[in-house]
Every structure is written in structure tokens, then in C-alpha cells.
Image (cartoon, rainbow, N blue to C red; front, side, top):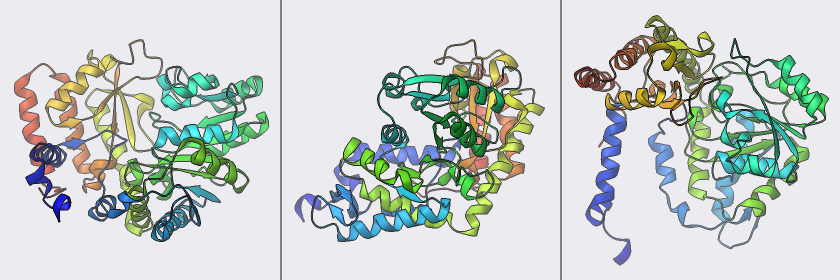
Length: 417
């Protein structure tokens, strides 16, 4: 078969070995980054399929290339499953990832320079919610709302007052580091009263919404974006869902507005993940994510660590390690990484430290819940985290914890080598 013959191992041993090493790292370690998860073999099989070979600019039934008969089938299935899962009137499954999806959603209803309200990155928002270094912050007139200085919770009355004074054209809700329930109905009502389009970015919690352990932004919200990995447990991609009256604008913003051909292998893989998310087992999984996060937060607080808002309602836990133990988030992340516990450094609300060396770390339970861990394991995980943070310069302690981590993860096997 010429060019098409040969295995990865025989043709490119360097890449083969890097993948093998990463698989070992995932198998052995505790993955606690709240935006990461593990996909099933079926999802992975679809991602590595021949669909990656096909160009399909346009939409089902209206493509700019021939030979898209089966691509149309795949994309239509993905759309219909997403509609069923979320109760959405219209779905576009072509966005390449979450950041492009947000910018496409903006461009569907905004002109450059229009005013947008979003939560500050330092308070739990996302770069694409208007940070000055991001295109969203350069293209639009951004007004940020903040969480309460004492409780670190959203103050909807204050947000409403700000929205009525500022009169933005669009208000974004949905966050990357907010550990409590979001009242999407309240946001939609605020947007309506202010004469703004309501948009929700549910990238982190879409799986929890499907599992009915977090309120849905539907049917209140005008436009909803989400990534397809994280708690949804698909592969890296995104969707824009909206009310029917925005359908044409959204589709034009995606193609030809910002994208060319969709990634058909990604669409297929996510269609498989959507089918998985329709099962009763997925609802149990989503509920367990939240139970595990609560148990982890409780154990961390019992170990003397300061948990922002005093707990969590969703999949993530934000910990102020600098106030708790005098260790910056960057050092905590590095020390935990040495012990095979993966998290990310993160600013906490009203942080006085740099975003590159913040006071906090962000932890999440989607991936370890996929492995089958439950509340009892969360107590052990919390204990190990606290042990490393309290002894972050002690190599012997980190090595001992590393061994305990491997012993724990070996009970919950993941991918075969």
C-alpha cells in the first residue's frame, strides 16, 4: 500500500513513545484540572476515523464540495442529539473550540465596538469574556461585573443595577472558576430589562446541565455556547445553541464568517459522546461529579485549606493556598505535579498576586469521577493534596505521595498501553 502502510510505532517511534508516555501519565496520575476528562474508546475510535480526510464547507444539504453524503448524515445526527440533550431550538456543531465559538456568537449579534458585560477573568470569567489581551476585549467595549468582595458570590441585584446603567448590547454569563450555581434565568431577565442579548457560556457545566444537577440556561437564554469536552466528556470542540430567531445569524457567523471546513471526525466523535450522555448512567455520573467535588472541598477545609465560598455546588473547587499555607499557586501546582496530582494555578477573587503567580489553585472532579472514584477516594485525595502543599519543598514527602497516588489510581484502570 505504499505511503499508507506501516504502524505509528514503526514509522515514527518518537511520536509513538511520547503518546505512550502520556498514556502512562494519565493512567498513573490524578487528573484534577476541572476542564479535562477522559473519552471512551468508542469516542476515540470515531475521532481517529476516515472522516478526517473530508472537506465539507457549508452545511448539510448545501456544501461547497461533492462527496458529502455521509458527512451530512453524521452532522445531522450530532445536531439532533444535541437538540434533544439540551432542549435547544437550533444547534451549530461546527465551531472548532470554545474560544472561536464565543467570538462567533458575539459576531452573530454585535458590531465591533458594541458594549458587552462579562465577568472579570480574575473573578472566574474567561479570556473570551472580554479580557483586554483577548480579541473579545479588543473588538468590543467591555464592562466587567465582579463577585461580592466578602462572599465571592454573584450579586444579581448589583449586576442588574450595573446592566441598567451601562445598557450593554450583550450580557455573558457562565464561568471557568466559579464554584457555585448560576441563575441563568436571572441573567436572562436582567438582559431583557436592559435591552441586551443574553448569552451563556456553559463550557464547564454542560454535562452537569444534561445530568440535571445544575440549572439549564434553556429556554430563557438567547444564545448558549459550550465546549464538548470537560463535563460533557466528548472531544475538543464546541457548539453554539440558540433560539430559532438567531439561527441564520449564528450559522453565517460560523461559516463563512470565521471558519472554513468543519472537522468531521470531531463532529462524529462528539455525536457518539452525545449518545453516551443520553444514558441513565451519564446522569448518575454527573451527580457523582458534584458529590465528589463537595466531598473534596470538605476534606480540604478539614485539612486547613481555605476553599473559596466555603465549598462548591458544581464540579470545581477553588483553593486559596497562599492565604492558607503561604505557598503561591504556581509553587503548589508544581509541587503537586511532582506527586502526580495535576491541577492548575488560578487567581482567586480580589487576588493581590499576579495571574502568572496567583494565590490559588483550581481543582475539579470530572476526570477522576470518570475513573469510578467516589466520596471515600475524595477524602484520600484531599489528604494527599494537603500533605504536598504543607511539605512542598520536601522531596521525600512528594515521592511518598507519588507512590500513594499510583497505588490509588491502579485500582481504577483507565487506558491499556
